Every structure is written in C-alpha cells, then in structure tokens.
Image (cartoon, rainbow, N blue to C red; front, side):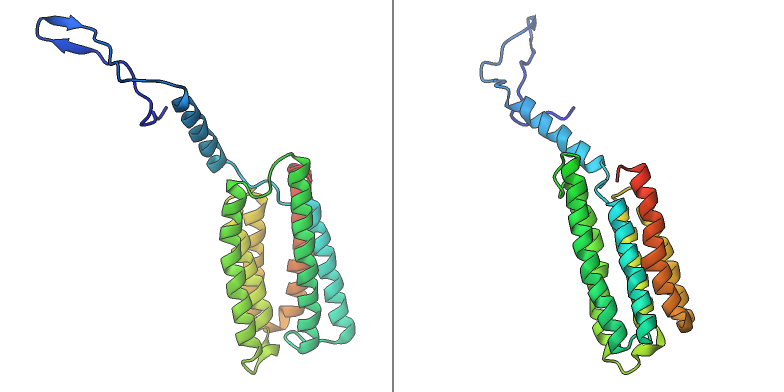
Length: 221
C-alpha cells in the first residue's frame, strides 16, 4: 500500500561496533497517514467503478417519445431536414433531455449514491463533446442549402452513437453496444439518405426501448 510522505517509521541504524536499534525521535505517526491511505483506496475504487446510474426505464420513455415524434413527422408529411421536421425532433430532444436527467437522478438517489461520482464525471466528459459537435454541424448543415438529403439525420445518429460509445466506456456494457448500433444507423443514412425517416424511428425509438429494457432488468431500473 502506498505510504504518505507524512508517514514516518522507526529506522534501524547499523553502527560500526555492531547492530544497534536507534529510535528516530523525529518520527511521528499521528494517524494522518492512515487517513491518506483510506482516501487513496477510495479514489482507486471510484476510478475502477462504472457509472451505473444509466436509467433503463428512462431510456424506454425516451424511446416512446421518439416514436411519437416519428409519427408526428409522418402525419405532418415533414421531410427529414425540413423546418417542421426540425421543430418536432428538437422538441423531442428537449423532452428526452429532461427525462434523462430526472431518471438518472432518481436512480442514483434510490441507490443512495451521488449522481456525479468519478465515473459519472468521466461519463459526462466523454459524452458531451460529440453532442456539441453534432449541434454545431446541425446549424451548418441546416443553413447549407440542402437539409433534406438526410445529412442532418445521419449526423444526429452518428454523433449521438459516438457520444454513447465514448461515455459508455465508463458505464455498463449495454451502453456502448447501443452506441455502436446508432453509429451503424447513421452510416446507413449517410449512404442511403432515403432511409432517414425509418432510421430515426429505429434508432431513437426502438433502439432506446430495447436497450432500456435490458439495462432496467440487469442493472436495477
């Protein structure tokens, strides 16, 4: 176990006349070293832990709202990338964000753990940058003159998947697997733009529901 710089021990000094044990009167051990060791053990355990506050039932609810958004786009005959399509999906994103935060907090509170432990902070630090990139690219693509060719939908699926994969490296195994599915759907839309409508429903809707049920059953809700 690592020894703190404040943790001093009695030393054995060998004199020419023989081996004599001489106390080091300057050495002290006032218990602070033990506290340092406990802090080190706690940090080590936190760094090895996974972010388990991923809300399985919250993911199911998010998937349900995404299916509702897909149905709304179909009723409005909103083409992917059109103003109506953007309005529906951005509204759904706001609802999904609120559901995610509330259900994560509730799951962590039920387990008696703070939401932003060391694994939680690493999860957030890995998840947020790809989402910020997706937001910037959305603005660029929307004002680029060709929003209806599936680029926005492909961008959302691909970069959301990347965020889930990178953040999921500090979470349960099902999370990065879900991210990989999103990235596959995003690549499909970028290659075949006509699949954008179905890929959005399959990814943000069905994929969230299926993996959410898996997480809920295996990892406590």
